[in-house]
Image (cartoon, rainbow, N blue to C red):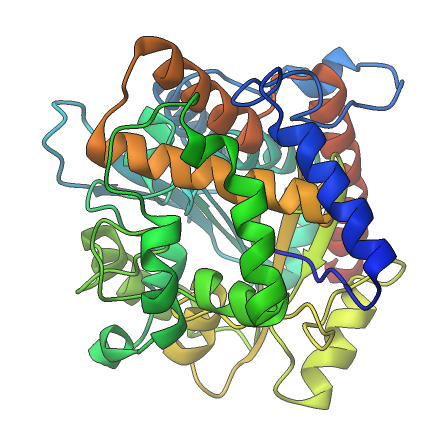
Length: 420
């Protein structure tokens, strides 16, 4: 996931400092280079191998390990069901969305859903967290009161080739809805920004366009305001198939197959707790909790009790923006009458809660999408852009991975204890 943060520019002093920062980052000696400053430095904390062992380096490895674990669990829990949804592809690689459903006891009231990889490349960390959940927190005690549904690699194409989107260039977290009316959603602000965020030429990191990106972005912030720009870019759009945050013209095939399964599995439970795993937005190495804005006081109270002790961003701040077609909202639409507690766990990588981190994040996304559709002027530009995007969503740092897994372990332990 990505976000922009609000920058207050009410004084000439603030603007002067900001422009000075721009000159530092846009100067010839650093333009287009990762330069140690492009990605924040990790704190000096020990790397823990017991957490690193959950991570794989390819989609095939992640899927194979998930299937192996699912098969072993089906031996222990006789009523467990495997899910395997083939995803059509022209890549020549077999792609599937895999899953496992383990029903709770006869009197179980809750269904816990943990999903990963709706933004393909983010699936590596999501997969690792799911493996840890299976090993440490899935237990007969939990199943007395709760069923469990694991959805692994919802966007296997992006997972496999290190992109956020599907083979149709669709952002699946803008593609989820109960009705096709979703695809008639209008985003007029996006149309106004289209040329800026979707350049139609080959990527060259040394070009003036790239060197001056931050300056051009700040000029738009000054003109329109950050909240307006944030909403226009990130809401999702259904008009430009090659553009960023394209939500599609129709539902992606795996989503069509998954919807009836979600309805069937959730039908016997009173409450559904959905944890969707993402990387990218926020303070590096920190877990952020982003539920949907609560529709009722009951949802807010239940969520705060379940995740007590954690800071929850309810989307009621000035930095909030709305999304069309997100997966967490879909579950509530499919099973009306149930108490649905959606929670996105987002693990920050680029300090994108800051202005510079936010702009560097969106620049990476623009360059990756531009390069995919229009190519690269040289191999160096291609190598650097792909390196940046992978690091933005799946950092190679053992410190980052340790921090993410430690925080995930703590929140999973708290939630599962409350559900036992």
